[in-house]
Length: 223
Image (cartoon, rainbow, N blue to C red):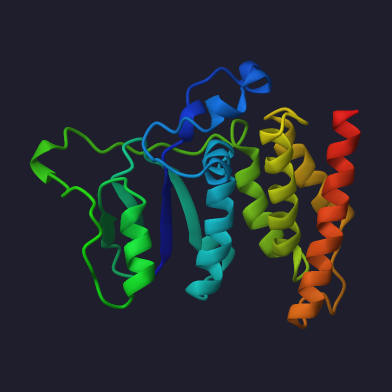
């Protein structure tokens, strides 16, 4: 393959004026236009941190260079991913936007089982559109590639920081637009050493360290 293309719906704020993002509420952030998901992952979709984590996952699952994993906005949430082959043909995975499908895949892999999701009606699809990511609107996405190029263990720092930041936003302790700031400042403050990814225990210690720093960042903004 040449590259993998991951798609993102753009969430509830794809067209929201940037100046209003500081005012959005947890309920607004969790009101996804296409998917019914839990509150944490719904906020991740609104910030596009879910795609940053998927970039990290795809890099390791398929042994790719970070630049071989790319992300596009696809508002309809019908095409979920694409593989660009060496001959420049493109293989796309399509399906209805229903979380029961990936759950069924996870439960039965490599087999396929009934998921309960509605059948995708190809003839009823009016259009499939794709857009370039606006990193001014979704700055958290870039952290996926940045953490992959940083010292080993940085991806664990990013994940830990984001969990603390999203929890704080849902609790009303920080603004929506401060989630990215907490993640970025935690990554800057917590640099893994050479042994941070050497074992599970070392990663757990790094995770705890990142959570403490992220909590400190949240407290500073809440004050």
